[in-house]
Image (cartoon, rainbow, N blue to C red):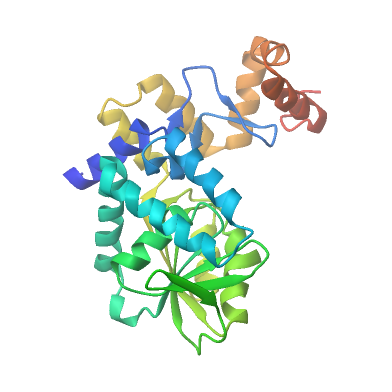
Amino acid sequence: MDNNQKKLLKWLFETNAVRVCPQNKPFWYTSGTIGPYYINTHFLYGSEEKANGLLRLIDMEKENELQCPEKVLAETLKNYESDDIYRGLIDELHSFIKNNIDIDKVDYVSGGERRDWFFSLIIAKLINKPHISIYKNLTSVITIDGKSEEITDLNGGKVLHIADLITEASSYERAWIPAIKNNGGQIKWSVVVIDRKQGGKELLDSYGIESFAMVDIDIKFFKKVVDMGIINSAQFDMIEQYISDPKKSMADFLKKNPGFLEQSLKADDKTKERAKLCLEKDFYGLK
């Protein structure tokens, strides 16, 4: 493992972009399921606090679809100058793209609302390409030299889409690919910071999109962070079982640790709500 990879893994945990639960205390997910790790790639903006600040800015500005990209770009550029982790990450992403894709073949860079914009707008500026901001309603605007306008026709232009992470690529299929296609362009490449290895790359392959990720969240990833001393062997064992079979591993955990669910039902409102959902949906066959 080279020094650049070590730095990236260190940043992921330093910013809580990746969090691993303490032994025998899995996280509750919004879905009402449980698991041993959380991923919030946008925390690589420097911290959770900084990332939430940028999300608030986007939420305040996104109704003005032409001005929003300009304001987000200005904010990310300011953070790039002042935050060592974000600058390091963006520089690594920039190098990663140049090492994997012929930039001369790229006509546009795109990013989707909201978290893709943490990375896509500034990369478009660094590689000197127009940026297409795609909103969830499939509206798209193009930003050239810091000024935005409505898209008329991309004239078959080849697009590099940059995202914070990819799971099953449902956002690509539902929104990003159609939005570019509807405007006469085609997404030819996808670059993400994190691939959760849940089938997204394979789906993009089926659309003829070359997919690249700086980090794959798989068992090899967690072996590296064990070797670096970031997590311990007990945490790794739980993750290994989860990656092998998420449903069975967490069902086994709940059956062996009935007190975990009981405590969750008496905890704060958010935890209680998720625990109740788990029982209602009976995700783990506990009834």
